[in-house]
Image (cartoon, rainbow, N blue to C red):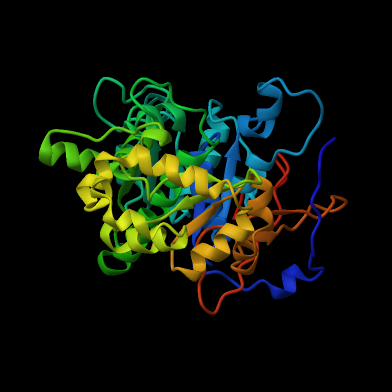
Length: 397
């Protein structure tokens, strides 16, 4: 049975909505699946007028559950998240007349946003060189899997392949002798999308000074390398990397996940070893550890990290998480809950800080909530508009 969470919904969202900071910006999006449309979705949340150009069969993300083998006509939350507030226009860009219609839309747009692979764009005359020459004021926002150059520039990426696997991020999350775990859907796509949006915003600002548009490009791989830059930087500077270890053998036991006696998880956040160790010792009532040479310095505690993990496992198992976290707070020990998805949706910090947002349903649809885009703007009350049905709108501004 599908669990539907229906929470407070406002009947006057349109009245409460105010134009966002991108109100008046026109965006033509020729994109599929996640990363490119996610960038357009954020811009639509922020008030931009985004025309989503789809093939006659629609963006494949509309049908992702069927593609994964799910039976039944279900809503598609991934598509809803990244395409709310847009206008859907159906054009077959392989058709000369429809391609001409697309170019007429681009002519009057501020931004052309695409994550279509470069060879396909070139065949249609929609490549960056052609369009930026034809429309000098246009911001051409390109999102690729692996970049514009190199032997794999035209290779299909997806965030699992380009962002996680190829950047080293996936393997860096587990010990070298372990396979990476399954990764949350769309995570790398959304990181890369917000990266592209920041570039588009910079290019729009630059255009106010120069009067000219330009190409703005990022890739799943480039964003993954940036996200993994701490680990890559250590290797670049020192020629080595501290690979992930099994938690029982952690060399950073104060930055480690633990479970309490009721089976709930928390993550200790003791980044500064010498500063945080004394508080942990006092919290667990083991002041005798101050005299143990194995734990006398940050270096010795690192070398005996597995011993500390076993000790904390034993102590934490005596408490429920609520009991333990009160003790940790009383001794200024820093921690964070390890939330399940259900926990996160009910977390007061998520709710009170508007991590979730009321969606505007299509007429006849049930109200629902979704994740909010990640930035607030003082003076604006931004609320997502409805998710468009395929071909709902006419191809005009």
